Image (tube, rainbow, N blue to C red; front, side, top):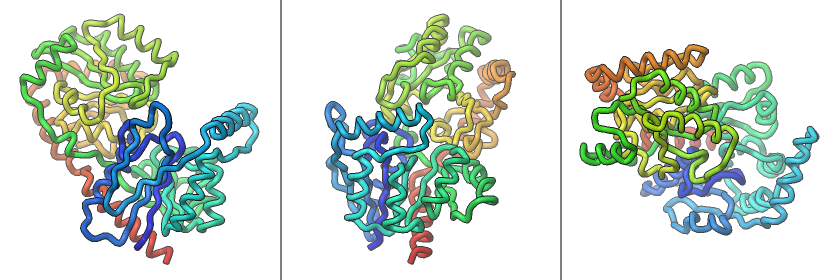
Length: 406
């Protein structure tokens, strides 16, 4: 039986996903889909930190067929001190880092498993050098979920035999570097979402109740924003856009700073002040569980995703599509790869973005027939990115890598 290890970074949330997180949701989909296989010659191991203190309640002791959850116990005091020391070295611009206790203990757990393939999810640590020495770089793969710097690409060449990217954009970005510096094998695995969570529908009564909760009427045109409240996501630009819109056009901001965490920042303070200047048009929900998001999507008329950085992929876009939302997004990295041709308006993220957003939102607010057609197209398109497709393509990549390593 082939053994596949998913190596999670220290800062990752638990798997199965009980605290949220995009990468963690994808890993949970692989875990659950793999458990459905009656016969499998592959076993998954999800290596992650053990939860302590208040977060312990989010830990899962479930047993999954064909998989094992490997909870790494670590010394929290030692871990804290080493992480602090590494931050100091970074501030001093000293190019040296030390592995914390979690990574050292996790390495020992992986050695016990003796896997055929190790997939580093989202990030890697200086301890990766020891993985190369122990297993060989051909057995190490890095699943890239965000755009990475050229310096990090050089590290990938030293540590990994292959990479898996979440979009063609990320793959092409790496290829530019690859042509000159590397022979790394690379694969594209387009993201998915759990369609069972977003193919649900709410009643007209529930839709009206949700709107009433925020002071919106059934005749208002409601725009929804879902995601982290940070500058990269363009939420401040969207809020400012509403200064130019009719009062019957409303904005519902769904989500917190980072999943279940409630962190404070200067940007959040500024954003709060901006929202408070327009309390009748703009409302916020705070953190909403992933399993409840569809209710808020379906209580809206339009989704806007005004990202200002190069998005690696588009989980939010797929979610909105499955819920039947027409969309306006920015031309941001790999996000456009998940957009439908006739259900999405794509705008350049330039100095005219606010004006263009105001123009397109105003037009759509008056075009019910257009919105209906966009909605139908997006439901059809969004369901292409289902979890069965994701699992199937992942297994195909794993099988190819295993054959090359034999």
